Amino acid sequence: MNIDDFKADLIREGYQPKFSSLPPGQIAPDHTHDFDARVLVLGGEITITRDGKAELFRIGDSCSVPAGTMHAEHVGPEGVAYLAGRR
Image (cartoon, rainbow, N blue to C red; front, side):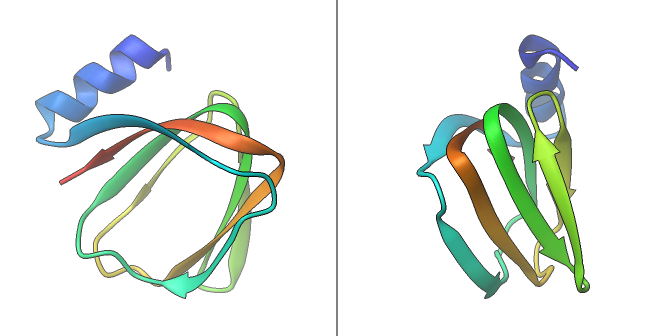
């Protein structure tokens, strides 16, 4: 999915879109959010672990993390740039 389509979907579904990035190697241990999140990776990579299963997301990949979902994040060696939506 391209950036414009992803952003339009976010807005249509009530998410607030925001471009952001995280530095190389950053680790966020198990945690939850009080919001639904959707992410489209624009550069670099990030591994998200949910229910003990790690999944790698690279450029062009997207994922959803519903509010209250326990997950961990591990940013790749080049960092990660992304378009995220929260609602």
